[in-house]
Image (cartoon, rainbow, N blue to C red; front, side):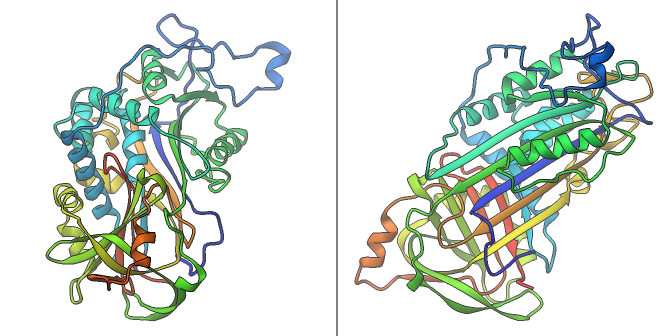
Length: 441
């Protein structure tokens, strides 16, 4: 639901969860078997009556030495292409949409470390195109290591793996956990998958999103044996916040033609972007580390048709060809939240065998005595707030100079009808979040 006011601080939050299931009810644990991962925190005797969940089993394990790979053009194009295609598959005609492609990419890349054969090939093709899965690990390792957190901006990433504690039915390979620890700093928890586990998982989600998402799961299905969870918490201030005199009531015409009174924020920006069907602007956050991009389809252009025409290459080209000029902008204050299943979109993108109980090959992840392991679903919950203070991080002082200029803006973009927006990493242009504002009802 999108609201006229933001009732929470300007954070972005996302959780992506992969449900790995066997053919029937089964469970999992790190085993003390020499071929498996030793679960030292396991208790016995009277101590077992008071389980110490959550216990991160990776606390006593040292990451192996791995190297990062700096962003380059092939990966930027692969990330942009995956993001656009996933966004296209999740957009709803007259409803607001919010998705974090980065969160989905990270959680699926972790899962892909346990895939083999056709399943691995399909996941590699969908996630990275020509970029190998091993390279994805290195890209995300480098990305995570360069994140900064200060009083102006904060992008926090966290990953965890949860699985049942029944070694007779499901065993997790140590190499799988070790790789995800080394590249993704993934925590690992063995648990009973009962009501306490549900509370622990949601508490973990809340802790890693500053309390803004306190529930990623509402129940634990008896068939579920493993969850791979990625959490993103993002906060930043505009380089130049909107002042009260720049905020006024305006009208927004929704996708169903209904008119809504909204709080419009006006400013003069310095980056104008366009293609043959839309125009827009780039608004930086403090230090320029992150960027807000808005695209308004031309009058008469259906927004869903416009989104369908986008590609990763066209998005990057539009950003690269941004014009350094003055542009008058008006943008409504809004907040949005969403809960999406990514199974159908990912299957349409070509990741089909991973969701097939018969064809899925996660033989590098572990083994089940009851059946084959496959992905049951990929779900994501997101929250976003855009107000006069900010949305993310990054920016420059150019806006202040423009507002003081006596020259009239050369371009104008007024977001008073359905529009598309992205939150991008300033260095790589990888989309952290992508969304649409269709309505304010």
